[in-house]
Image 1 (cartoon, helix red, strand yellow):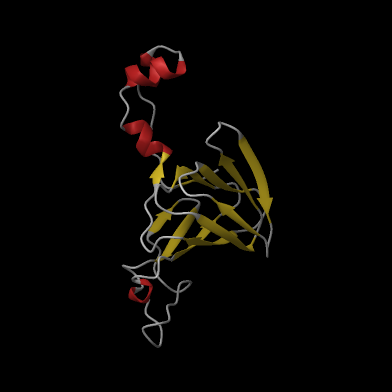
Image 2 (image 1 turned 45 degrees about the horizontal axis):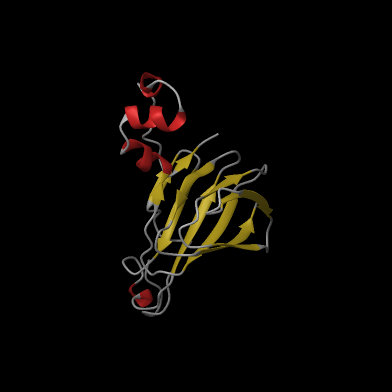
Length: 165
């Protein structure tokens, strides 16, 4: 939603690019806000209802800085070594998620979470866990997890960007 000049944009007033039960994502990137072209930046406003989760995912081409505007969230961050850290953000706090590190965001509070996400790429890519699992044959999943492939039959792997509680 273009602002008063080519250098302003109403992120909170723009239509969400992602709408799911449990939350929305509004995006200011080089396609929605041309003023970002060539800046190497994109900003998203993530809104999650209590209990909702931004599904596990990674950004292969961008680091992510998160600023908590309202609510309380838990972020799970997977390290390349296989270690996981989980930490909480409350209003006024920020976190950094390194480029290509696997992570999720969960609203653990009783109020709507509003998180400003700043990316180091003006058009960041996103690969969600559900997209990854959909591309893998069930026999490979079975071998990977040490269970019979039929265990994955009928499993709904088509999860949206945001999973409700």
